[in-house]
Length: 263
Image: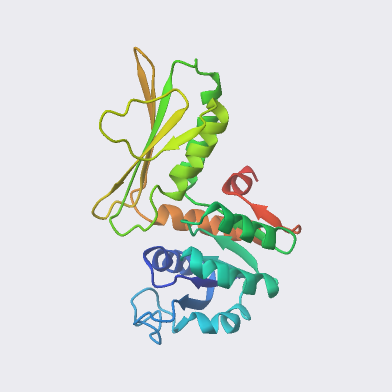
């Protein structure tokens, strides 16, 4: 049975992951949250997450929790990851990370640290459906150049990063395929679009788990490709698949969900 330490355990994703993990016979051996979280000290049972008496602990207890774990699984903040992941690497723990909102330098820093030490999966989106959509987007290479592309993403109002990590990942992919040189995240009045621009539009409202839509518009027709998450369970199941996969890897490196789903 694979033993998991979940970081960000009391957050929206952490709760769903723990619940799904327990129902699929993973063992939760650690539940970590920020040091000022008011729920610290309560058990997962008391929090209504699952029927386990594992206590919710602050990040100062991470090393102790990791000592019992096979995998460090996290959905937290970039600031927390920059502190926590070096500790997980030092202890030789496999890593599955779904945190978004990093600067490019921060993410590169973590990739350099991890890549030669332990197997890890870094993914802005663990949904199997979303990763299938990303595979479909490679076909954009075959469209005539008069087709222009925009990205629309919508999430719940509490999501901190905008655009989402997934939207930026899609934008980088499309830019590479289609030769866009600039990603535009907002457009003011009287600002027409140039050929080198890729638009990324963000909506934050209510409790939307996640919508990503790619709009491909030509002069006389339009294609839309969209992925809609009904619940966070879609991300949780993908993350647990990544946990199973990373446990089988012998070589250190930073892998993606494309690697996970290719096997």
